[in-house]
Structure formats: structure tokens, C-alpha cells
Image 1 (tube, rainbow, N blue to C red):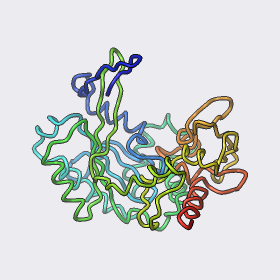
Image 2 (tube, rainbow, N blue to C red):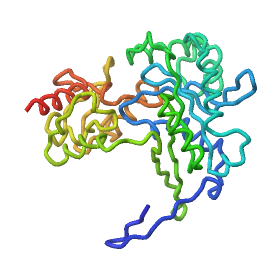
Image 3 (tube, rainbow, N blue to C red):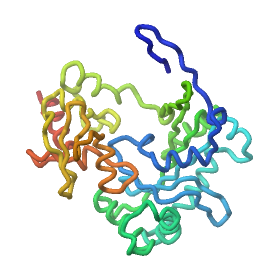
Image 4 (cartoon, rainbow, N blue to C red):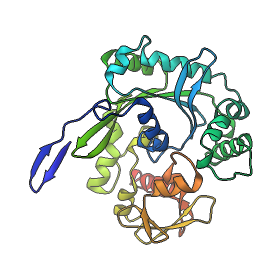
Length: 326
């Protein structure tokens, strides 16, 4: 990372969480409140648990549900040395915890064992205080699954996300092998940089690796306003154009009204891709996330273009298909 001074740059060296006196529980709380740092705006996620103990007294860090209905285990280590000091490998610890989540068969099971106690612990963060924790948990999870059209896909698979400021070679090697054998496990670096009294966090996905074709659509859309011709099967979530591309294409424009899917809430689209709500500028992700009460949200699915009554995802898809046919 570099600090720009006119035309000169000063290098800002990366730090460690230990150096800036942050404990693992601090990093865990940062992610609990900002899980969209390791998601993107093509994925919805709802945090449902923290520090969950299984029958063998193993304690997992964060638990979530994603927009595919999967239970997601998020395991956190501050630094590389935290992994080295452990008697059990980071990735195998996570696999053991994920295996216990495979036994959760129903939403009711999840609420009873995980989400209900989580709501009780963080009751001040929830509205609907007239409901019990179990009632509120059932409502929120069922709404989440219904809005993401995965009511009948609850916990068919489990995912693992590992987060640390750095990873040792053995962990990366094991994760790469697990991915090659169809285990859904990923690694994210959360790297702190200290600049004077400010701490900056850089998020980097390490595994699974993106292949070069994942980037073709965005690169071509910037140069020619048209994605590279390719079959739909090759268009991945991470290759999809974002709102700045859509504004550049002219399929949406500044001043358009964006409506939250299934709600009456509206916002005005701005030229920088943010929205204006009640006179304040905010990202679409943050606006929609707040309305639905989720930890992360599929922005383009839940943002509806009022004039066309289509989601931004549908408008984007139609434009890309039209260009592919030219």
C-alpha cells in the first residue's frame, strides 16, 4: 500500500494484528459486524452465531447462512503464528466444526441450537422485541430463505471460510487440495496497515484462485462497453460488471429511482453508483443491508429499477446477452 503525496508516493508497510494490539476476538467482532468485507454484492449472508460450542467442546468462531441456503462456518486466526502454535491444523479444525453443522436438518434445529442464543446475546441489535428469540429467529431465517428463493435448499451443503492476516504454506496447500476434491473452502487475508494513528484493512482472497477468464467481462466492458463473447457458464459471480459499468453503458442513469425488492423503500441512483436516501449518500449495499437486516445482500438482485420494474441483475443480464448476440 502506498500513500500519495502529489506525484510522490510513500510505501506503507503492512502490520499484524498483534502489533496493533488487536486480539482474535476483536477481529471476530469486526467481521461479525462487517461480513460484507469478505462477501461481495452478488451474495447475501446472514450471521446467525458466534462462538458456538459443539458436543466435543470445540468452539467455532462465526456461523452464517448464505443465499444458497448453505450454513457457512467462518474461522478466524489473527496471524500466521496463531496457526503455528495450535496443536490442530487450522483447516482441519474448521472441517471438524463444519461436519457438526451437517447434522442441522431444519431451520428449527438451527434456531434452537445457534440462532436463538445468538439473538439473546445481541438482543439490543434486533427490533421486534415483542417476539421471543426463537420466534424472531424463525421469522428472520424463513424470510431470508424465502427472499433468496432457497426455502427447499436449507443446509444441503456447508461452506468454510478461513480468515487471517497471513497463512502458512501447509494450510494453503491443504485448502487447495480440498478445493480440488470439491470441498467448498476459501481463504481470505485480512491485512492491517498502520498509517500514523489510522488502521486500514486490506482484504485479499487467496484461495480458491480465480482463473484469468474470471476477469474478461470487466476488462472488455471498460474498453468497448461490451462483454467478451462467451457462454453463460463461463460468466462467474466475480466477473459480473458492477453499477459503474451499467451507468457507463447507459442502461441506468443518475437520477433513476431504485426500489428495494418487495418493499416500498426508494432511493435515488447517483452518478458514482451510490444512492441518496433522505438526503444522505450511502452505498446500495449498505442501504439494502439495513432495510433487510442481513449481514450482506445480493445488491443487484434486491435493487429494482423503478422505471422498468426490473432488478439491476436482470437489466445487466439482458444487456450482456444482447451484446453476446451481436
